[in-house]
Image (tube, rainbow, N blue to C red; front, side):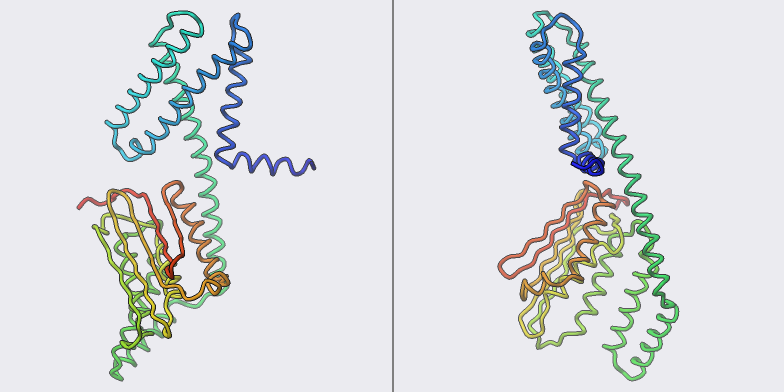
Length: 345
């Protein structure tokens, strides 16, 4: 193996969560067996270390579950109750097994304290690692924003000129009594204003994102006539104004659905549903499929989906689930986001 390959392999191992946990527990076990004092034999120390770390590891991962499930969602009584129950049950079990191995009575309060100290230490390590990871992600987001700004500067069209042109076209269509064209221009202008000006924030009201989806749908409908066999549905459930979301996060899925799901020559459909409930946002997109080969060969769509996946990883780490499936003539996307209710009804 070349020496230059070792740092890369080490970085991959440290970036893999499972490998990192295995290394952590292996190191602790080795240190516990080798450094433990007393007259015990190596086999006895190995058995005692395995018992202690097994129960401590169980307590650690149960505590991680309690942190994510209850403490981070501010359900403090449930978290405290679960923590006390975990320490009581596992502490009693650890004290009993340690006493059996050492042929002594043991000391339950001391055992529970040792277990609590160990769980606190692993929790501190987890939050420290999460802090480092978050800082790295923030640096990556900042770098990507700078790259985006540079790209926009290289291919810049004055937005004011663009909006003025659209306003002139709207006025011309209105004077010529072409309401459909005028309405389409107005919706396009509204959507572009949202993309260029209003989306330059970290979070936006979910209702505003839904409003832009509706505008996009209305623009797409201008391509169709009443004779076309095309069905488009967009339903919402829950109070969208209570929630926020990263802007322009849902629109790429909608654009992709219309791009691949609508054919004027074939029966087509696009169905969208946006649901909010108890701190969770669910967005589902279904569209008809008119040839998998065409979709797989579309590098632009593949790049768009990769960009959305990366944004989700950076903006909603461990707080999102994205499922993309295709079967029986239907392409289905399901996105779940965990977020906090920021405005009470």
